Image (tube, rainbow, N blue to C red; front, top):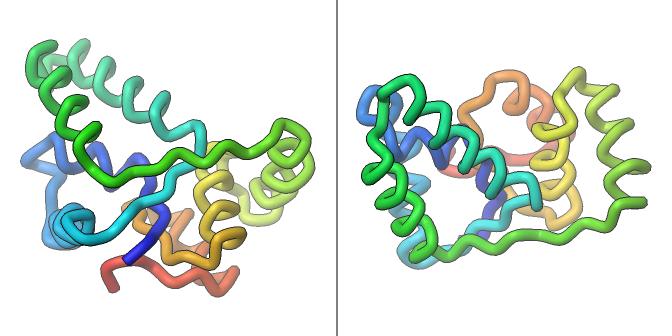
Length: 137
């Protein structure tokens, strides 16, 4: 199975109190499947980990270990061009009242015809509105 993976699902794997059956099922699907992520994803993950360190939710060693685990998964980073980002993602973000970051996940799912794995409620609603199926459902 191929799908678009967002940061909310990814980071939930690092925190026991955020992990749920849906997130675990998405992680399990990467044993045989592949996730596609927009170029912003690595920065969002890194930011989530550093914020967790600063809030003492994760140690530096735990964050490094989690980052190493992610490197072992079938996650491919999409490289959208600058002109595409500004002309396609910006209007999508406006239309669905999303951040540009979240709109990049929706755009990638639309462009590739793939389901979207997200825990973000606004992004889920926008996906449904656009006819994008949700992964793990």
